[in-house]
Image (cartoon, rainbow, N blue to C red; front, top):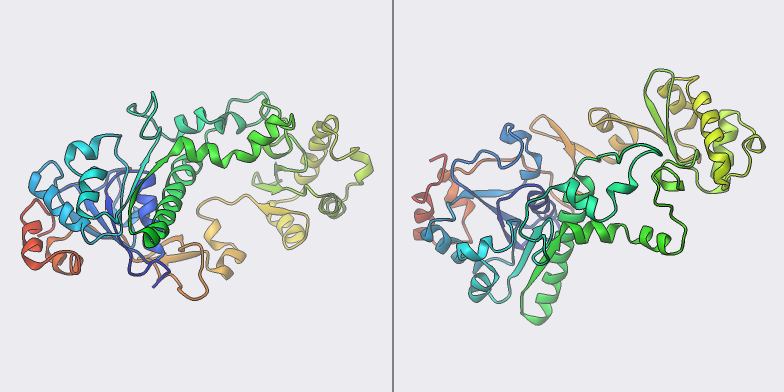
Length: 381
């Protein structure tokens, strides 16, 4: 099931954007074979495997890639793969004997997807880093936060997952389409700094036009404006409003009992601070749920600020089945949705199990090679 059904993709286990990219490809129907190091329960945050949701929908084997025999097995697997994705520092797979040249010599149609923080080239390419560093360098982190406040550190959505995993998946899919025409594979160099920079394209255009101030919290879209902001309610919970368009702005103010004329011109930044104080006072007079009953479902551009436990219970997300429960764990459903080649419900994360390698590697390797994999440090036998 899914639009990528029939595609075979090898994932060399890593952290952050690599597993997310593998999940997205698997969610869309690709057969993703993840190769982990023997005995390694988790490459990221220590938790039970069933909670590592980015590992869902995978087939897994364990191989020590420092062993030449294991490398030979991976090259055999490559012959039957459409793509390979990896997230090591530049040069690591080359030293292992699994770089693009090695793999594409065995399969010229292979799409070789690489995701790193700094990219394959450049003065920082070989240095360590994490999401916070990549979004710092590209201007994104400086733009997040309130006026006169330090930059606010977001979760890894923006760098690792949006700037890294999503651009890796986009690049791999584009290269697969091209390979179907030319018969030739290619290398996809997905750098988180490149992706994070690309996500900010509109803001670089606004900066060049003199329409974006570099001081945090002074623009419409960064909490500077009273009409695109968050407000605390009587019960300490938060709501968000974002009626940028004049007619939606008027609708919000009418519903909360404020005369627009009393706030001054909406787009005049000189009016924003006193207007924000006025809205803050009004929103503190009711609880979050009371405001939801008054404003949800209107054109006031309103939503409650929900946490990760609350979001799956919201009526809209339940109606759309945005979240599903797998193995007793609520989690986001596969996205996007397809009208004809629908994605299958997610399968829970599993661990490499040598007893199942015949099933896992069917269609990838002949039986004698499967038997060899079982002897190369696989766990769970």
